[in-house]
Image (tube, one colour):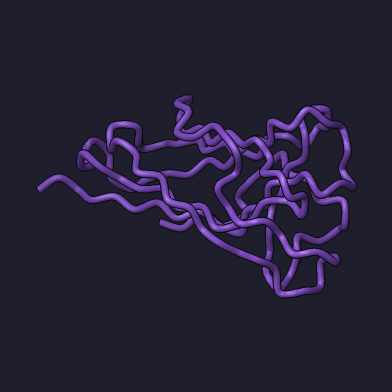
Length: 149
């Protein structure tokens, strides 16, 4: 299942378009901004049949700053990752280049998934700047799971 960046709310869209480096994207800035957490709700067609393991892959990038931005990923109220953003750093020089898109996969217990789900991605940096390279950017998220036999 793919969750496109357009499904996230609470993200920053100060440029009037979610286009960035050849893709669409949602991004969040530090805790001092109103854009520090983006959230997507999604629904699974299967209920109660999810297997024991699942995986969540985030495709995106970290800001241009050398130090990794502190990030938290929460699925249905459970933190599945908190720490330095594991995505690659963005390249310099604005929104027109190719970007340094990458992905990170988190293995999650299947029992975290429900019919109706909420995924949140937060930037935990303690700043209030929306023109700084301290962002966390997402192109899309993929969820893989198996049904129980």
